Image 1 (spheres, rainbow, N blue to C red):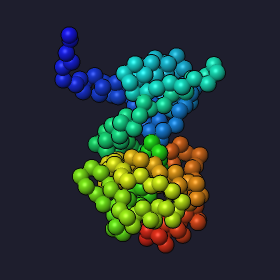
Image 2 (image 1 turned 120 degrees about the vertical axis):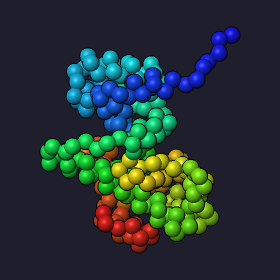
Image 3 (image 1 turned 180 degrees about the vertical axis):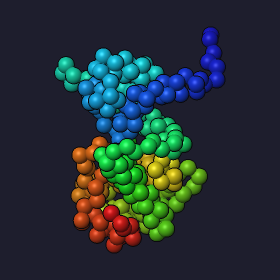
Length: 225
């Protein structure tokens, strides 16, 4: 029986090294499924070219495809792919901003964005650090454990069965970890339901509402949004 050797990191890195494929992976880190036409626009390539890129990423296990009638929608194969993209983004150099549009988009994403269902950017890191300071979660290595006070706080927010733990995710814009995993997803989902947060026209970017700003300041001491 044939045995597998060591992992081939170079093969995976080669797939992500193409700028068009990298743009697709980054665009999908918020967990959505998008059609090839939208991904072609994001990558700045033709429909035929994006089809080739998507096929490569799907065969490599980076993407999965969903079908709705005659249409196809692509999403990341799972949170491990999003975590890999975020980890590389934390190491990557920043691009030069050459227009006001690019500057506004970069600023919005750095302030508050979603990453595979949880919160990232200055907002995500700020909430995470506030939860640690208030004893709502405790960090143990690469895991955030929910405390009894944290569980009570989340239930008061309306999360009936809070997950017991979440993972750390190194934030590429803040260079500090934010709360990810099941706990991070549950918290972010509830904040959207409460309308403390809203999605914006800029993909992945999040806006804090007036009510959200008041509540985050009052309950966690998180401000400036």
